[in-house]
Picture 1 (tube, rainbow, N blue to C red):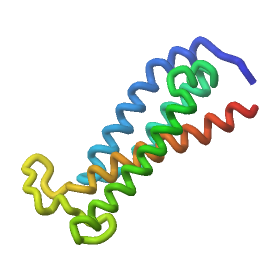
Picture 2: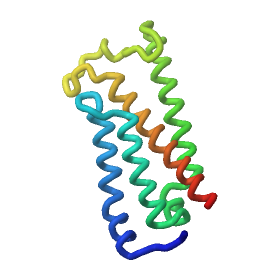
Picture 3: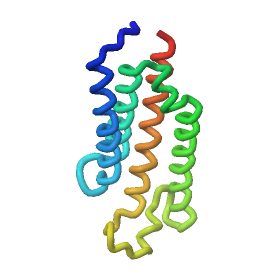
Picture 4: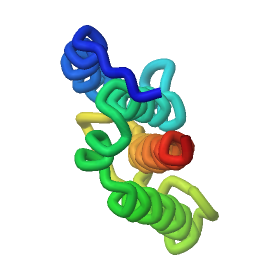
Length: 139
């Protein structure tokens, strides 16, 4: 099924950037309101999937190459492990919050939660996008 309509093309080009931006918003404010890493990552992935469906896999893969998405997912996983090991290095335990020792006035006690939300969101967004890209490729 390779039918592309003008309406789908126009709507996807206008809507996808807002979906990506909203996913980033859900990621960054997940420590203070409902949302967080998984939800924001899925919203970001849905924006990428909209481009896959509307523009075709080849066009969307030029924007988000498979190899780049795979590297981003790997780096997010390693960052998550690094954040977990930072707690061990501080003597708190895996995924402990070593940033409690630092006084931050802009985001009170968000510390590792904000960092973990961002890392998990990037991991989920790139992972779901990779899965869907692989599924769309095989049709």
